[in-house]
Length: 422
Image (tube, rainbow, N blue to C red):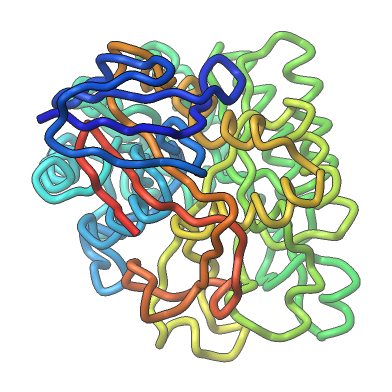
């Protein structure tokens, strides 16, 4: 099967170049300026940009056990619509992905039924209970790309050190969801001005920062590769910068919602503005944008967290934390950051595709001859309407529902197969 993508501006070696791309089966076999070739199908990308397929290293597919929210079929279809060709799924399922059987279940389902490549992140501790180390070695042999108790945080520092040492022995990156439970308490939103105004208990940034500081020290002792998920505060960024300056293998990610929204979004009592970590103060949001632009933050991840309508349509303090993000990630960041001159388009492509793949050692995802044919074709002049009836995720819990965003994903090609076509 041959596919010719012609007349597009492709992101190659840090810049955009007008080229044609010829794909045979699952590989890119030729990239060059105007050329003709026989192909089974041709995609005219005139007026569009071609990026390496987006890579999301932090998502929740809810399969097994919570498939009323999302499953591997719906989740990967939603990811493909958003331009993602690779997704890393978190282990907080039912049952928890803390053993080889659970890893193989997800891998098998994704291979047979998925619309993008799915890599599994195994649990740090059994059942995410923070009491006993999971079966990391066997899960590593089975193909996991990292471990995390995301959704939970290991509170016992001694156990966390043992987990990091064990992970380090097997070259397994450790991804943390930093939250000190005693400090966070029963907080609902950021512990700041809006929480006081609305009468909500708050989650202080200190709850995040304490664990980041602790785990950086533990990572230094254990020589473990540490990755901080969904970083959200200015002080947390300083801690990561100090670690990097000291030469420690510490990285971090940021979500689209933490980059473009702040605590004021919660004034509407919309439960789709409730997430962990919470939307912080404007100074924190601005610090995140600066850190992403300057390279301190390594990549963007969606933290795609589907919840059913009946779960989100409750009083604010009873609704679960989290929002979906696959289908809106690029349009939101292009609209709110690139078009407002806060981030270059080139940097956005890097942090959504090449950087996350490099961070978790997923291989070279660049557009190059011989590489996998994973790419996304985007019309930057078109618009995306975020509507419940056109959202492919089973869940609709998005703060951008009903909004119109700039740019539109026209085609997603994963392994040479068209997985989304507008």
